[in-house]
Image 1 (cartoon, rainbow, N blue to C red):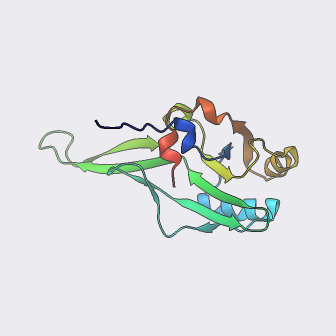
Image 2 (cartoon, helix red, strand yellow):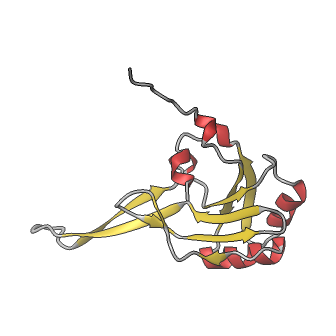
Length: 154
């Protein structure tokens, strides 16, 4: 007789907080601003977040050993341009396709993922983020309502 074992979804579930960031900064400038505002040390990861063969997303990360947190800044939007070769009136046109880490949050520019024991964001942290010039808004996303959680596995 064969024994079948099933794992529940929360067995592999990690505790993290996800903050949505709307801003007009480039990724490196936002990482620098977050480092200054939150007294953290985000650095560009050697590997990008690859969720498909089509595109990859730059990430910045830092392991805070003192507070037992793992910080990850993820670019939510990636644009891939392709040259289309047609032999007609519209020859050599470019086409662009937009990809998102979280397609249900298409208007979010960046995601700040903080792996920690608590599932709430410190209000002082959000206040510090909102004081950064060029950040339009920042808010916590309820992680249990995300449909594409697998894209956040780094």
